[in-house]
Image (cartoon, rainbow, N blue to C red):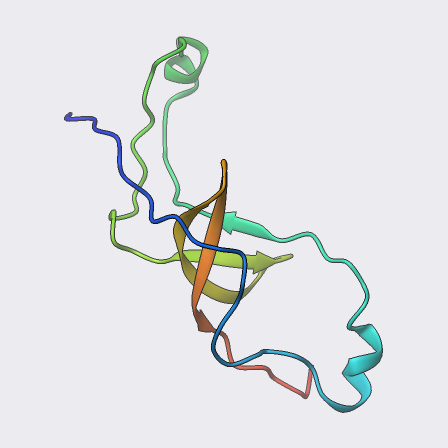
Length: 104
């Protein structure tokens, strides 16, 4: 297995493009905070392998380097995006917003 570091694009925190802002009755929820999860991929390992992990070990994920990451709210994918650097932290540049289903 070949392991190498990747260079992340550095971005400013200013968004551009279309907004996914709610309209109508949902606008009342605009100030409510929600915890999001960004899923980089999945790995499968035997428990024995996990118990033997040491600092510097690498878990290989099932996600290609150029694949978008899922942005999750609970168990729902709400967007997809690419990993970027925002200052000295990770960020996700949104590349696709999931369609909003008003019936739910």
